[in-house]
Image 1 (cartoon, rainbow, N blue to C red):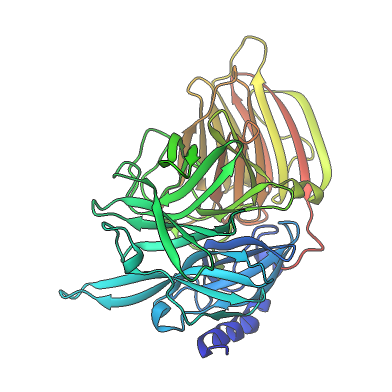
Image 2 (cartoon, rainbow, N blue to C red):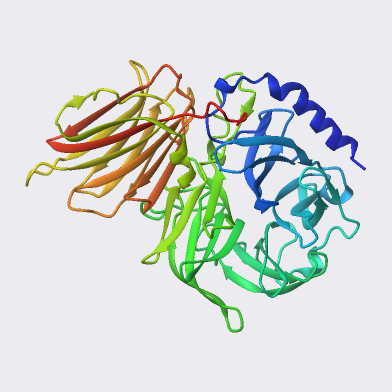
Length: 500
């Protein structure tokens, strides 16, 4: 039976969500039906379609008691809105249905596994949450929480585990018929660890091992883990809290970490070999992946930053969006990311310029717009090396977002200082790219409220949110010194899409 809390959430989104015009939303990035969105949840395949749930507070554009919103798609571009899937309506999740995942069961039902939060007070009066893992089963639209909940709680933790920080199960089924889940936890030294559990039915679980732990090296609590094989390696993704900066690789605050290594289940488990950031932009957190029927590993993330969530446009009726889904691969010990190939089906008119000399700031005919897919390649003219190169997008007389490359330092910088947000927040970020004799290739995806950059065929990615007026659609190119530039720009069209 549907609870009053879930029925109220569905009634609210049905009443107010349809009143948000399509042109107030991104053209191809997922947004909440109404209100607040953060972490993607339950990114999975169910009955031949891709389902995406998300952390959701429909009643305001601020974080609140967490529900699960729900959309689905067949192509990662056109998203159909479905009713809210979960509401905090049981004793074990009254303070929120936190992040989790989903899987299709052998009997054709869809199972959601999520973190239920109970809120209380410590003896000295501080608020304290207790987090447990819970499940709900349904038909892809309606879900029933099971009487066994919670299926994982404090008694299932290793000796030094914390019930306060025990969250975000990522669930999958293996060929042996068992289900596995990785869950974030905080250990006795105050830092994070990723725990691995196993079950035959998703109701009774056994602790297998600690896959990896932070040891206060990469932040503190490790949230939102994902773990999967890819190109002969195993990849562990996590989002640490309280990161400290490490050069230009990791920034302060809430960050993301990709650990690449080998996994031998019968022996010591996961052995990390390579460590990197996942995304190098200003807005990226809590990524989650799925495996498509054709064998691709696809990742999606919350395109926002916890430190900047107070910087909202005035009178916005939704807040939070996801990244473009990205195809992942591992090459030479590095995670590569590229937009899903389905995006190419949305390409419209193409404008190409080759070997254009750039010294001052130039406009190129046909290169403008706010919903587009553009690849820019810049290289030296002969032996003369340019000092810097800039692309300015979402530009008018007052606004612009700048992407700047310095070949001598091998750095790429994003600067949204003049993107239109009247708030004193972090607006710039720089990161190192691999030098290629002064040549740089950037694939730039623009949507109405975001910029995503894919460097050198996916070697690095950087995402940032912008709230620039849509009329600001100029794009210019500028070099310090002389450079040659190739530009290939496609308009992106989603006229037949569902509201996204």
